[in-house]
Image (tube, rainbow, N blue to C red; front, side, top):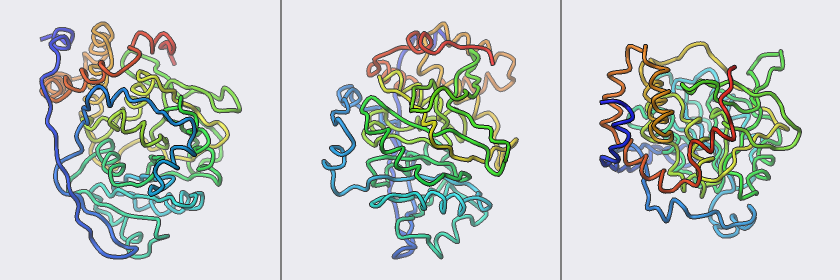
Length: 360
């Protein structure tokens, strides 16, 4: 059956998973071990999905929930022994009061979290471990569910943030129009000074390219890089978090960025700060067909039939396409597509009208 015909069939239902947690250790070295399935897609009722952000500023948001932390930094790691402590130390130096760092150990085998458990940098640093490999989207959702902050910051485990990063994030998210923000991204331990200021689509196959600097003050960009991005908790919950149907790695940041725009929020770049990120030409763990699966899932959820066909055509020579497509159409993608279409205020025509695809 062709892509467009299957896309028109509508939802086939979804499965909701449950999860619980055990405390491992005590005091400052306590960590949570999650047991059970992955976080559900949170296909919420239409009324909740459409609930607006009613606070006019961050101070009202915080005043309404005095028991919460100001900010939670969620760091997902899988075998990051070389960089994790450096990342946590960097983030901790710029952390405001009443904030926390939550490290999600996604089944690491290199002992990367051992030192953090034995000698925590602060009582504000917690470590949680999943019982199974979750991948980026689900692990970030787990971290968010266990966190306390009104602002959620998602950082890769191989980043270095500058002093003052948190204040810039908090100020930018005080605007209720803003859905998510990211800093400029530079290359860790590279002296050439190259930086990226958000991203854009450059093909119908969801290929992307970095944008150059377009101003000194925060401004809107089509896509934010997921290696370091921040949202208000209530916006994150309205969206249902990252798409937990995405597998292992790939496109979770692109999907969240597009979802934000289609729900009426802006993605903004913070050009006044830069976070360094370690880029690699390969993976430290096996990655096979999952990136293709995630791209196709994103397309089926957010695109109309014409652009879905363009996406399929772009990938028609991929030998994994048939197997990936069979798995995708048997997933919960239909219920997610229906829920998002009911909740969004813009469609893909609007998005690509504002941010046209242009060749790299």
